[in-house]
Length: 234
Image 1 (cartoon, rainbow, N blue to C red):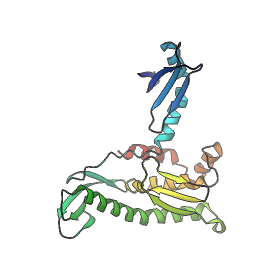
Image 2 (cartoon, rainbow, N blue to C red):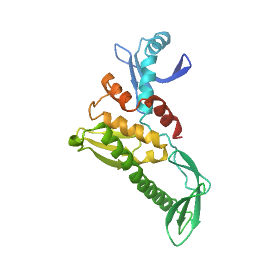
Image 3 (tube, one colour):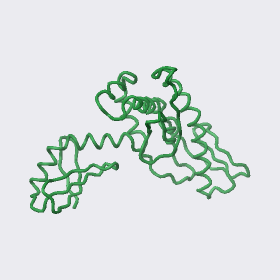
Image 4 (cartoon, rainbow, N blue to C red):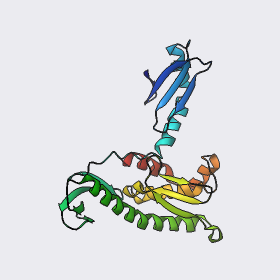
């Protein structure tokens, strides 16, 4: 059943279910959904009291997942629709033509294609255009930050690009950073923030205090930029 409590200015909504268990459990999912499992004999007052005591942790977990969750809604690929590129909004203009191309000009992203109703082709052309732009901008920013943060003798770090639905970036133990191509729609400083964030994971594969100290050192204004990224891609 759907329930909620007020915590300061935040409304915490959660799914409550009762089961044969001895203690109350709280789980925050990557989509920010809060799931609460309570013993059969739990009262609503007792559940709410427990949720309230864990409210700060719940909000912190939701914020953590939100920072890696692209929010741009599905596009319909019709003329006049708004599309983002490097932090700015552009109108989509579809032009029927025997040639296929994508061009940015005078406030429009113009897509030329044989059939303006062929949404699949339009999406394919736009995604290729975004990938090409991402390759150009991401690699420049990545190279810049690697040179600042990693000694040349240890610069085996590599960059990969990928469309991802639930992460802005990933860093693995093999020193490879993967960035979500969707980031090309965000302002450059947001792209750079994600790059720095992932490069810091080369030293700390967690979100410990040491990790955030390193992030603060290399990107002092990271909190404001993170906030902008979370609220911009809508």
